[in-house]
Length: 121
Length: 157
Image (tube, rainbow over all chains, first blue to last red; front, side, top):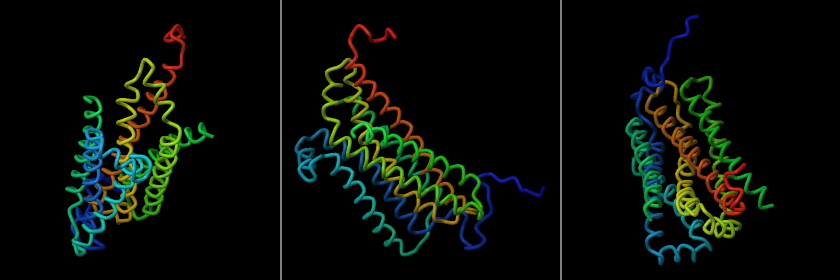
């Protein structure tokens, strides 16, 4: 009784904050952009170390295994880039829809890029 | 001990996928009432995926080398060359997304379609990548089985 029908993308603007209903906080924008960049970086790093043995050997030398170095590097890139991009926004909010699209495109392209690379090499 | 670690890895991965799916469901029904549940699901997803990374990573660098050699000598060498090589790098995608998910989920999602779109995109990608990775794990496991199975028994059961 009296329960309004809701759809995920058709809700009223956020009345509590008075902001646009598609805006996300500076930290979500900063770390979200960092995540999208890191996904692509991860694939490029995988290509680079698979194609160039000296890089693979160097990464293995750093921690004992190239995969450990790869994972730590990815997490570090995400955290540092996220902090820097958030700080650079100075509290300015961003568009969540655009960020979501960027994450999906980068996520799918990065995954497909990995599969395709190891299929052809 | 190796087997316990080996089974704990996909178990944590599946729990991470289920938590991400839980996030999707809560986000589709986002309201003030379920905000705490959504954040709990996002946090559970992060914990499970990080555990899957640490446990699986330990097994991979400690125990995988002999199994890799077995796979490469067997009839399914591509179980390593394609599936393991892709899986070990593909795993970092849900890991990074799982680290970001609690940051995205801490927002007020009710009444903000932008915030909901970000959370849905991140959780959806975790579910999709997680399922692909679980499938790849099954292929790798079967690659070992195919290599160890006597030639006459393959495909006869």
